[in-house]
Structure formats: C-alpha cells, structure tokens
Image 1 (spheres, helix red, strand yellow):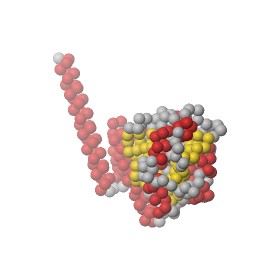
Image 2 (cartoon, one colour):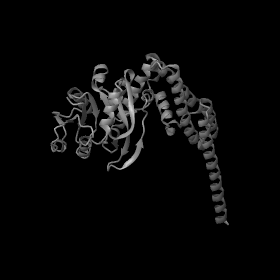
Image 3 (cartoon, rainbow, N blue to C red):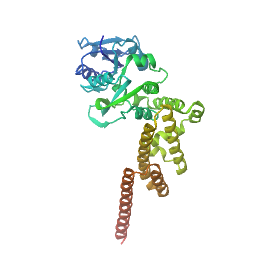
Image 4 (tube, helix red, strand yellow):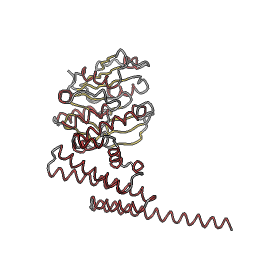
Length: 373
C-alpha cells in the first residue's frame, strides 16, 4: 500500500498535462501512487497519460464527463494511500513538495490538512508573483471566514481522519467544493500551511476561476454565511442572508478599497464593529484561552488598522474629512509604535502628494498664462 495517493482528475487538459505529470513523477519522495481520473476527455489527454510507463500511474477512465467534484469523490474512494495529495492538471509541484508535506503530517498527527505557499505563473510558466498564506491553525480558521487560504492543488490530507470524521466533497458546492470542504474540516480538525513555495499555480483563460467566476462567487458567499451561522448561531446569521454585510466585511479585510467607495463613515464604522463582533464569537467557538484570545485580537486589530490606512489613502482624494476620521479610528483600534510609524508614513505620503499636486497645478496655470500671452 503506498504512503501517498496523488489525486488528479483531468478533463481535456492536454496543453499543460505533461508538465503536471512530470512534476509528480520527479518528486524526491517515491512511495506514492498517481491516481489520474480521465473525466471523459475528448482531446489527447488519455494518449498523453498512456505514453508514460511508470508503474505508479493508475489511470481511471470515466465513461462520460462526471465533472470535477464527482471525479474527486470517486478518487477519494479509490485512493489507497494513507495521505492524499491533490494535483491539478495545469499546475506544477516542486520536487520536494510531497516529502515536506509527508514529514509534516507524520510529525503533526493532530493536523488533518496541510497546504503550502505558492507561486503564481502565467500560461507560459513565467512567474507572476509569490503568494504567502497564513500557516497557523487559528489564522487559517479566521481567514476561511473571508476567503480560501489554501490552493486546492497544494493540499495534502490524512485520508482516514477526513473521510471518517468529515466526509467527501459536497457536490452541491459548484466550483467551490474545495473551499466548502476546507471549512468543514477546519470546524473540527487542525489545519496548517507550510511556509514553503511548493506549488506553481497557473492562471489561464480556461481555468475554473476564469470560466465560472460568478457562479463560484455566489457559492462562496453561501459557504461564508454558513460559517457565520456556526459562530453566531442561526438566528443572528439570518441577518446576514443577503450577503451585503459579509461582502463589505470581506472587502475591508482583504483591502478592496474600490468595493467600499459607496460607504459613508458611519457605515464603515459599523463594518469595523461587525468584524470585532465576529472575532469575539470566533474565539468563543474555538475556545481560545485568554492568552490566545489577546494574541488573536491583536493580530486582527493590526491587520484591520493596516487596511484602514490603505482606505484612508484612497479617501484622501475624494473626502479629506472622512480620511482624517478614519485615521482617528485607526489610532483608537490599535495605538502602537508600529501603527504610529505606519500612520506617519501615510501622513508623509499624503502631504507629499498634496504638495506635488499643488505644484503641478500652479505650473500648469503658469504655462497656460504664458501661452495666452
């Protein structure tokens, strides 16, 4: 029986398939089976897989296209490994990915799911950016309220713990089945991320996110509201059912200033208070002790203050009064040396920008007068 099952459903993935397969077969960790589920592909996917003679490859052909979620669940049932690692047919695993994840799970048996940091690449494999994710369990659980702090293609899970205690992918959670499963796991079991860049996540026009973005967003919102229900109770969560408040909180937490431009100062203050209310319920739900509570409260305060500073800079152009009020709110949230330094840096930016603007305007007016003369 192999230690690891690498599970990769693929549908018409001929373009990047060889890169994905090669990245798994070249792993420094060797004790694995490579379970590839050909989900009714009509291109050369099957021929590409069959061109490999590596005995670790186990090809399963679906009679027709089942879709990603059903294929994943089929793979979970067929997997023979103690650990299951996900791999998408358009992504690339670094050579030490499996060995580092296996080592972590073996030394941290209380952790049911582990992901990694990742590098984002384009269609040609060129680096776009390096992306870090929270690695502490509490940080990840909190992050799951607003977004998915895992890359699907980068996770490895303990098969027995997840399938026996949590279950399979939810086939109703269309195009967000991974996020929904992570949330269910996080409610009951420990989770983590490795602070190593062990996956290259490819962005291209035919990816799930690019193709089904709107459907994915709607499904994600329903999952988030369900998460709120676990923390606040069903009655209070009912007030969030339209998703408006949650979208505003998510935008503020992720620093999406453009999404908050319609809010006035009073509404922004309400969003801030809602986040802290949620944070208190979060700590109670996961039974954080007083030291953990203070630590998490401080982390939330610092992050929220940083995002408010960014929002302040955005508001400076359109509404200086709101900008100054936001700066005041920032200081009330977390008045620390670090925050003062950030605030002073922002002050300097604003002052320099304002002075440059005045100088450019004066020069333009002077030039105009010369041209008129």
